[in-house]
Image (cartoon, rainbow, N blue to C red; front, side, top):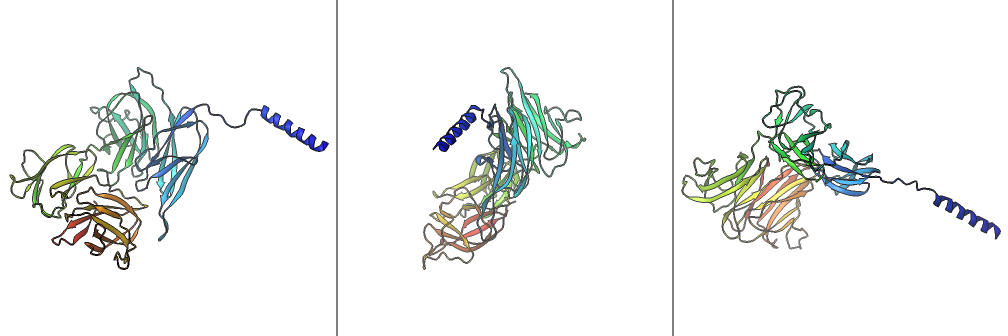
Length: 459
């Protein structure tokens, strides 16, 4: 008994000594800001995590929402959905991890670059900023995240001042950034030139107005199919979050016009008011224009009967946003009226999936179901169908619906709502691979019991 008593006394003594010492766990003394920016043009969104907790999803040309954490050491992780082997499901993979000893009052930006399945992570470090009430400046950083672009001089000047050696923010190569500099609030133009050559303008972006007491990171990216030029730029608010696009000053927005109403006249289309000369003549059913450049702002858009300026079919104004592509479909809606359906297309190719958009323009008096089934799969209800519609009850004239598919060989079927006994169309082969972007239009035909399924090449 004495031995057990002695052991208990010793354990108690050890416990008291341990409690008397200070904890060896690290203690936070402040906080710092972290975010991530995705610079891989064909990537899906990355999940940005601190340890195992998701901070945000980060799509191409976007930054995660600013987040602040204690000044401790963490591992930041990057997950992405990757396609499985043929016949297997996609899966979430941890493609990168980055340890960081966070220091108080610092600002960290994780740059995701390289390959989606094995990205490189670069950290840009700066300082958080505390502003005095009377300060009239903003803080600017510039980052180079366009892999196709060589070393450049970056100028951020008053619109009236041309670039000249000595006035550049700095000279940077891909993956580098120009540290913070203070500028007075006002309107500025970002200009990029080859390093050491102020006479050759690679890109010049429209003026942007920046307000005092903000921290701004402007970064240049490779343009994708949604952009109007080979480069794109974004201005990120480092403290409040949010971003704005900087538009190439030499590139105008575009519109693409679709004639998708069988009962709508062949038309001439005007972009002015009063009407002068048609921008498009003899626009007939199923005609699709190319991408037509138009100025940003309010566009007067008028359809008249072909060769008859006085026969107005549609007369409307449409807002045209700088730096965008827009699609307009003439469709007979469920009320029997010819209307314009507006759409901002997503043309960017993503290497890990297939993008497909569907629009139903067939004025057949009821909505349709759309099936995409493996090639050779029946939707016949006898025996009972096992196929499930991809889209159920799609009405005529609804905005195009954007979806993602796995790669493979499929058949498209179109039926009246809930009726597979007498399909309106199908099987229509759809063979797609990773990275494909496909636009599908369902057109009315002269046969009230049939529609056409048409694939439209994406520019």
